[in-house]
Image (cartoon, rainbow, N blue to C red; front, side, top):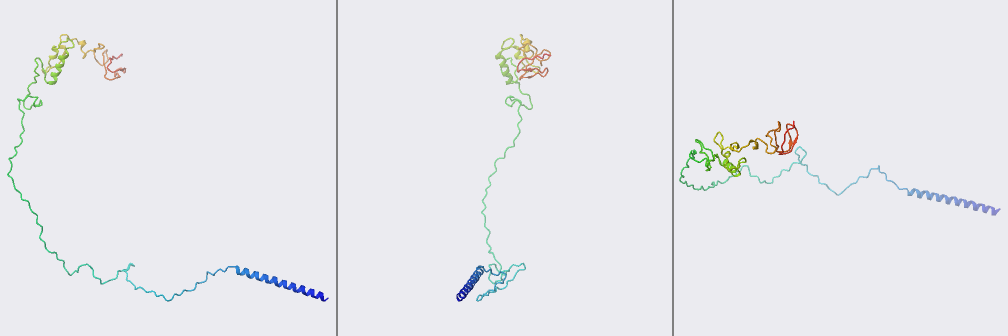
Length: 249
């Protein structure tokens, strides 16, 4: 019996020790978890006032303003460079500079210019010297110096000389009377009809020397030649340049 009581007591003590040990472990664990949670400071609290001692701030003197919020410049008694209004500025009088005047010598006037007088052409001058225009008189007739010529100027004289060199196309002479014919005013006028061998059918003015037809506009059996190729204005047929054409209708 005694041994049973001892065993029972021993078991009870062991259980109590175990319970106490478990309780101590739980308390220790709970205290560790609580200490590991960070503490957040309270931001709603008012910070303490900071008192600064030992620093003195000078209060600036008030300045005057001009009414618009700008400080006016302080008034000082410093001297300025402006002259005193009570003193008058005097400028010393200086003589005006003198400009030397060049001396002018007058020379005696030259002879007066004679007035220009318009000259009237005389009537006894050769028209070739005066350009062929004579005022107040008639020019002398042109004289080529060749007997039998009736030339009224150098151009006409050259034309007659050319006819004499070529010869008359009808009689073949170099002094054909047709070269020296004159018109109603007495001027030289080449007239083929004055030739003794003149044939009107051989005259290119009246008859075509290629087809023998009378010269005209192509109608009524006449012949016409165009300088450039074109259509006949009467019949509309195309005609080459310098070819004989006679309208068919």
